[in-house]
Image 1 (cartoon, rainbow, N blue to C red):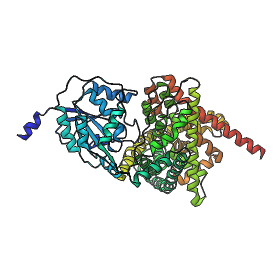
Image 2 (cartoon, rainbow, N blue to C red):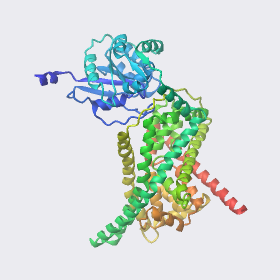
Image 3 (cartoon, rainbow, N blue to C red):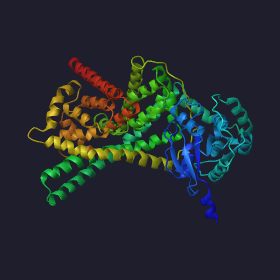
Image 4 (cartoon, one colour):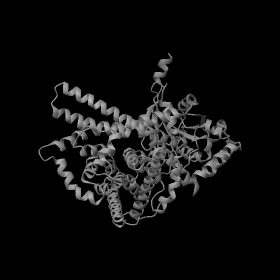
Length: 612
């Protein structure tokens, strides 16, 4: 009988709305069971997501709306949220609030109540608020608003059953004529209600958090602390990745020898054996041995900073620089995304309301080194700048990498400024940047997110491109009496010589367009004539035998830092801008910077050699 009753229940649609950083997407994940990644900065969730609430037999469909501060849209996120609620597409709207900053969150609650009375207020993060001496009288809050309010902690799965029951009750409320969307913020009313339901205990913990925030966002101390954190992350990455990379290289070298012997014993033609082993598998193994160890260390550490709430504070410290360059401070957020993937950074530029400023952010995002470039930079620094330094080598490597990242930020500022005073003139707009509370990192989720969502995803993408790219290089190097690869390298040699590199290096960058991770393994293959796999321990010898010096390594690092975006990023730019011309600009801007820097470094180096 109970089953029949449930079967007759109406299928409901509930919409989740709320400010960024209130744990809205965490509520969505907890209710639906979907493993949705949640970031700690504004605009991370851009697209709508839907899922069925567990335990309801498919009775409630939940829609996760983008985070927004108001129903008067100033961004695509706020417009998407406003439209779904205003058009009555949802049977119930759940407004998620952060218990520790209820006053600010109540503005969107009051705006939503002007449109519909089928509302549930979910006061989330109630446990974190309690740790900071903040308590919320949820029953009184509901009485003052005239709708049901539920206390919850989505991370700890608390209050979720009560929330589902409240959703069902709210969906049955008789809806009067839907109200109009008011453009007037309701801060005074929000302040009044919050004063009646929120109790704060003044304690030393809140004072400590305030002091920490002042330290991290201070005009001088903020930059110093963030640089120190960046250097520490890079130090741990470089020191920790050296031994695993070497061991992986040696293991893969032995494995490749066994595979080669097995294929030969199976009677496979020598040419085919060489194509598979010296071409596809050699490139694949080089990519894995060079990329996997640093990514397996860097991504968990980077995710830890995100989980702690430090990334928005980094964006806050960068905000003034972008405003001085005539761009939008939100560009700092898209730069942080670019460290993971430039294509994701380009998509993230949707959070910027101004079309002009959004375009500036898109065109300059590839000046930020993505995860695909870090392993090559790490390897070159280790081989040519920190070799033989013993225990101090890790610190030197971290300082050099920190300097490269600062150089990339300087180039981003400069390119943004040049664009704003030439083809994209205009005044910078204002925006809201919320600093979320400091949170205890969830180690289990950090490991899963960083390993599965980032490390293995990026490695899988690189591996998928490495195998066919290696075979292509092998074919170009072994086709006919005059292999096309050799001809191309010789044609590029004069250009490379002026830049402090050679034709093989330029060819590797050209052929590495599908993925940045391919450049170094392709280069080693070109040098060895599509030859043999060499792990990290032998890679330096291969490069030195082909004329590399510290100057060569420095110029290649500059090219790795500033060169054309990968194919995925270019396709994303084309989709986001809808313009072949702007896509070409996204290709040319970083490439021109890289070429000019290499010409300058090579010229200065040559002049210094002549003088001394």
